[in-house]
Image (cartoon, rainbow, N blue to C red; front, side, top):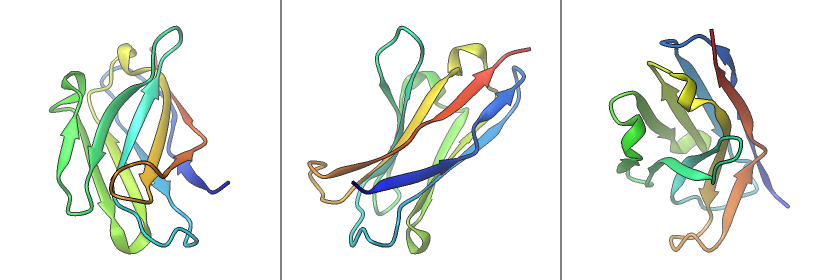
Length: 118
């Protein structure tokens, strides 16, 4: 099972920033859509942000204007810049990468904890 490698989570105070990174191994021959989900305790996993191969982006309403997703196709890496963090952003963040356009072949990261607390 191929996994993506995430980094960048941690503890941050309200109003602070974090940048998550997620790298796909070179064994994945093609990568199409990429993005980030998150899951808070007792809540369903939600799609936070996604980005197509040509950098078309989409965000859940609660993070618009605060988070920015980007990708480096040469490095098979997707990033999530998170600014103005608040306690509601506390969750485990999971990245994904689609090996086919339809999304039916999806690779996942292991998850990284983001905790926003004073």
